[in-house]
Image 1 (cartoon, rainbow, N blue to C red):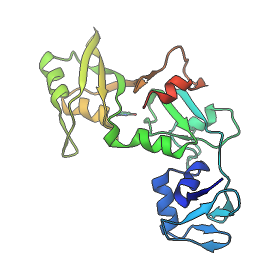
Image 2 (image 1 turned 90 degrees about the vertical axis):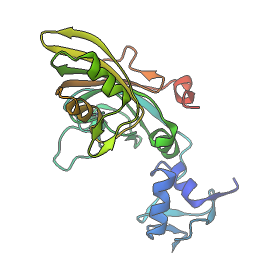
Image 3 (image 1 turned 30 degrees about the vertical axis):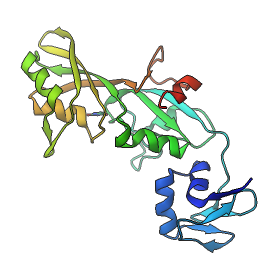
Amino acid sequence: MGKIRLQKFIANCGVTSRRKAEDLIVNGKVKVNGVIITELGTKINSTKDIVTVNNDIIMENNNFIYIKLYKPEGYITTVKDQFARKTVIDLISINERIYPIGRLDYNTSGLLLLTNDGDFANKLMHPKFHINKTYEAEVKGLIKKETIEKLKTGVTIDGYKTAPAMVKVIGNSHNKSNVQIIIHEGKNRQVRKMFNAVGHNVISLKRTAFGKINLDNLLPGKWEYLSNDEINSFG
Ligand code: URA
């Protein structure tokens, strides 16, 4: 094996994304053969050099894992919770260390992707890739056509105007509406805040698709490995 940039090596080891690996390097958390390296351009020999992050030896990971989970409500999207609440990782019975790509609120259900491939995660999270996320929201009240138009063109949340979205009503009953909304941004609690901004509280929220990947026949709480087609669907 030839030489490889230190930040790429750290990402390949599944520690974190390449960008966050750069922060670790600059902050003096990374040693190569016992010497702290803070220079970002540094190249290492991935088969000979011993690299540590926070004093733990890391090894290259040629076994990347890509998982889709149907997150139920009542699980927190993190690896560990300081309040000992159930986390999405509790639902996945594998030995390898993986982490969620982005997050769903505690009370949101639906499709969540997880991996140990830092670059893949970074790519899917980066706003410039404009990956569509599809949600189904059950909201209070019967939603009007004009309101749908407002959501489509963008509403102001936290002083920020949301980008154009695809929005359609998929059902109405007893003073509630079911709405499908497709956004490519990922601001904190974005869908809930968008509906609040037009006067409709969200009763329940489910993500049904991330890019071209959808829940298929997964049941709540269940997970499966992504197919190669799904992994490659992000181009
Ligand atoms: N928007 C929200 O409001 N919550 C989520 O969990 C995801 C998108």
